[in-house]
Image (cartoon, rainbow, N blue to C red; front, side, top):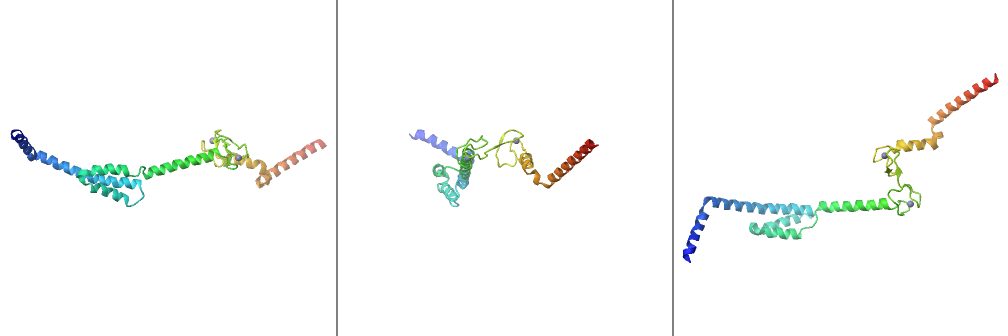
Length: 201
Ligand SMILES: [Zn+2]
Ligand SMILES: [Zn+2]
C-alpha cells in the first residue's frame, strides 16, 4: 500500500512547491475574491433596478457577502429565485403599453358623444351625427378633427379648409369684404349709368 501512496505523495509535494503552480493558485484565489465582490455589486445594482425600496439593494449585496467567496454561488441562485421578476423599466413599459391600448380602444371604438360603437375609419357617427374624422383635402387620408394640420402631409387645416369656410357665410360682416362689395356695386352702378346714357342718346 505504502509503495503506491509514497510516489503519489512525493508527486503532490513537488507539484505544490512548484512556483508556477503557487502563482497560479494565488491568481485563482484573487480572481474568485474579485468575482465574489463583483457579484455582490451586481446584486446591488440589479436590485436597485427592480425595486424602489432603498434598503433591499444593500440587503441583497450583504447576502452575497455573507455566503463567503467559497459558497457565494449558492447565494446567487437564491437571489435569482427570490428577486422581483420585472425591472422597474419593464413595469413602466408594460403600464405604458396597457395605457395606450386602453386609450386606443376608447378613442377608436366609441363615439365621444353618444358612446355608441363606431369604426375608426368612419367620418361621422351614424347615431348622433358627431364628426369623427375629416378627409385631408391634400392627401385624402383620414385626419382627426382636432388636428390643426394633417399629420400625414402637413397641410394646415386652419388656412386650407377653415379659411374657405369662413369666407362663404361670414363675408358680409368683414369690413374688407364690405369695401370690396361697395366698390363692385359702385362699379356696377357706373356701368349701368353708362349703359343707360348710351341707350338714352
Ligand atoms: Zn355618436
Ligand atoms: Zn394630408
